Image (tube, rainbow, N blue to C red; front, side, top):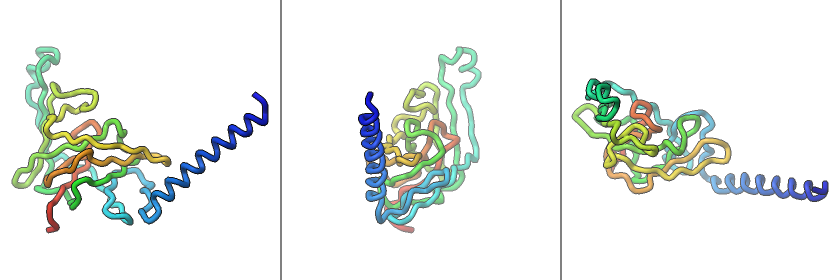
Length: 190
């Protein structure tokens, strides 16, 4: 290829990358800059990101291990994870929140799981029989809420539920119930 054509193509490529970067900056004008530290963040308003903490598992139980091993995995292995407290520390008052994730999991693994609420705890169950490529942990299908993932030009990704979430307690997870970030959807401010 002639040097002039190579130079023209490189300049065109540079212009496209610069334009895309400027477009992302314009899109986020008036919006808080994306968080730079690794973590999971909720966009509370156009000007504020709130960092979620990893949900602490208070208790976990495995059922069916003996049968699972005896049948070489042909039966289900059931796990139950319990998280302390009736509600997550972060309560959200919108039905379709946007989260930004950097340095944790991948967009392909991201999904939201609804937790079962108890008096002073929240729980989720998994079974090996439900495990699939898009549901590594084996969550019950009725508890899963898929997310729309948008990759960021500077790393990380945003995740927004495909559909509105009903009031309740949830876990944003990346393929495992023991590495999730809990939050609640509230219908009214407390």
